[in-house]
Image (cartoon, rainbow, N blue to C red; front, side, top):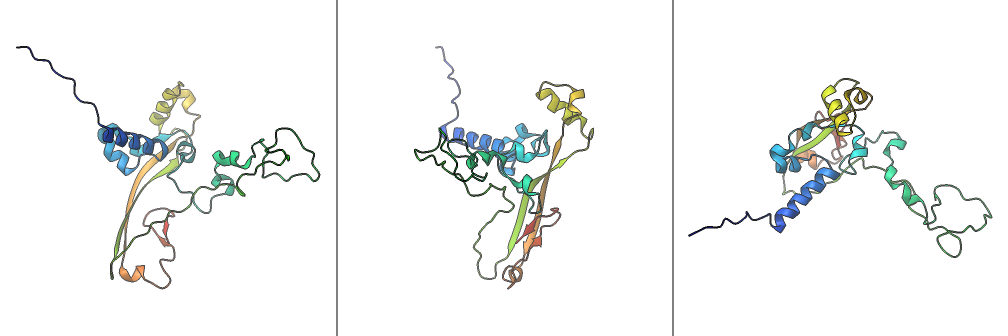
Amino acid sequence: MSTTSLPAAGPDSAQVRSQLVTALELELVGPTQRVLQVLASEGKGLDSEALDRLPSSWYPTGFLVPTETDLSLKCDDTADDDFAGVDGVDQRKPKKANSEYKPGSGDDGGNSESGPARPQLFASSIGVSVLLPPGGELQLIARWGDYVRLAEGANPDAAATIAREEGGSRESSREQQIWQRTPRQEALALSHSEITATKGLTGRPWPKSNGLHLR
């Protein structure tokens, strides 16, 4: 009696959705703790990845911009199109008085449809709401990645890898900027009296965070 081996069943719909969520999170936000746990050995090295450009130019979201950052660096360049009407006129530019109608306007009256009233800024804070029982305390853990631009030649291996991915050479990679990620995790404990204080947390610094505050 002959036997026939059936091919192994493929992933079900739940597994496919989970894989899709992980892929999107890695692509849009970066190597988060959840992504690293899911990828396991396949994600080796992602927690200390090296980028050839600003992280804010690589990932669309998932980062915070320091409040004291120059305004030109806090603006989202990808949102510039929102300030143009349907005819391409930049709504941030002042209009001339008694300007004549030109073809291609947003409506028959010649008026361009306007976009947002002001430039879109990157986020500098995030908010979380929690419910605590009477007398409750908080044990907080923050996980993030610090990206630091390296000096020229500080990480030749990363530069060579980036150059190979872009079809270049080790020599050309020396001219590239490299942003190295360092995984961080710091804990913070808040007592009941600190949580319920009249003045609140008043910008309590997060330990060893280089500028992160809890407000």
